[in-house]
Length: 271
Image (cartoon, rainbow, N blue to C red; front, side, top):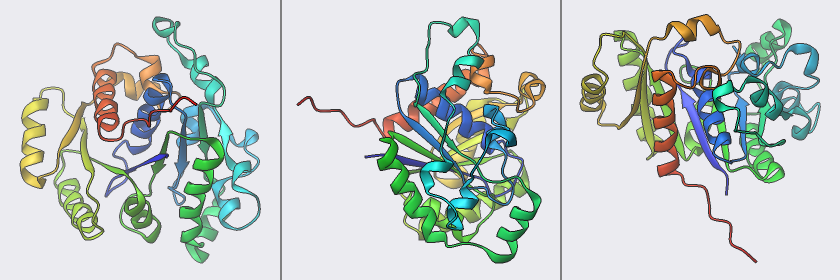
């Protein structure tokens, strides 16, 4: 059965989409079949990390939600992109075709405006998760949520096997995260992991992680320091592939492993 992982933040600009892309990539490199739903319909963009420009996108999640196409036509195999981005230090790794799919949302201003003004049937999003999981035989499905609290976000969190909440060491993020965790508790979400991002280099990661755990009584999966290389990459690729030796990459690998420990890949029984 496909394991659903939602990645959420109370505010924008936390690095949510970059984290989703890297965690998903790490799982693919471990031999899993993965898909990413860009459910941040109001402010999408994760497809840019995979080099999927508008000219190559025929249908988006918006089209499916508005009944204009089957969901399968919104799923793009981006496995070749990972192979193209593999650093020479990872040259022995080969990503098989049809290992990672991306379901993008539209970046067209008029379509975003339509979502904001008219909305869509949120239950279709849930149906879409299940439909695509079965169709593509996925091991893991990531949901890149819209920041804050909305109907679609609550749905994604409610049906996820694990919810990863990312925050910065910032007073507004701390207060907003408390709200998110309170809502998650009301939804009886039992598996939550916290990730601190954009932490100053001089801050001790272990001490900050313990402080956050003490505040929220929720496990911290990782602490990611600010990286100049991340800024240089400027969302033009997958960080862990371009900078495999970075301390940030190593920390994201640890976060991935914690997810796998909670949600191990089902063992395939031989017939």
